[in-house]
Length: 478
Image (cartoon, rainbow, N blue to C red):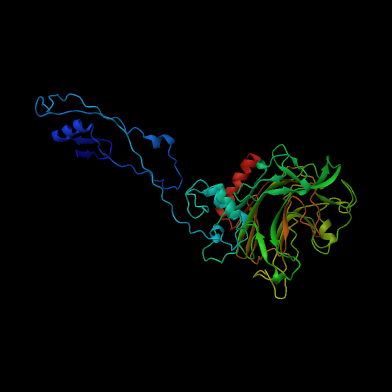
């Protein structure tokens, strides 16, 4: 065999033949040189690089030059021929070898947020990240590549219950609804978080889209139905096997990630404006619309339009505040107190849980309602008839960490409670955006919603202010 030397870096090689080897080459018809071996492996990021088909048929090794050095002017072979030229054929022989890693998958590998149950959001978040890679954990069909087929196989494990883990859950944005992602004529508001928590239209009724992209929700006149109709979005967020059994016997089969569990940290952000062309007020005698009469003031009345009906059911909701617990409180901020009372501020309520026997899903902060509201703060920009003539916008950010609840309104801290508690919703329930959360509350007449986001952790102070600046520029241009 010739002596072969490969230079550092592998870009050149040198082969030295003896005269005996050259003689054998002439007699045998050629000389085969094994210069080097090529090993093709996957890069570290896990993505597959497929070889082109022509590789299997041989590829060019590169430019090859050939020279002859003689220690005599010429030498004569047995048959008398002189060596003055040699032909060289350059081919690459490729042999491929595939190595697969044994799959050690278990269904609880899909519990991405580690909350003890595999959800559709968990599965979609995982496969949105790993489709197209060679990650062996999520390659359920052992094809060597994570594909959409693996996603379909993984979806069958939704609602699998998993043992609690000591590892903290991943802190993530778990719901992302942006008005610019809603397509007029479509029946859903798509979620951009990767979990595919898309929200459906209430009664498939198309909302009005403002020139700046905002989605007008609430109860207002609909040309298609020739009447005042509800406009907004909903999604089934919690499901129990049977709502008609005692609370302690209920089995949860679905809880989506934007719904906090009992005393779990969470945050949400909502950007909106009260509509300029609707009166958001209690119209007692019909000054600007159908008369509504004086409400039952046994408890503070409000128009809540984000969240779900929670009286003794767990969970939270948010909306605009109307009045206090007495008629004098209701009327003290109204220009025409006997006729019309505008919504003035905000309300946020969480339910701490029920007192079953034994109690179930009860917050460590006790049972009953935890209410935050302010009806003396004119944050909504409404005039005395309930119209937003000032074009005021609102960026609301609510953060829960442990037993502390904070609310920021356009960057200002307006609420800081230290006895906050919340319980998991205890029945099959819809989460509502822009419609009424039901149960003894007034109807919002018009609210222009730009975005709604939910997180499975409490936002940090710097992130709160950074997000507010981004939302202000994105939706209002300043």
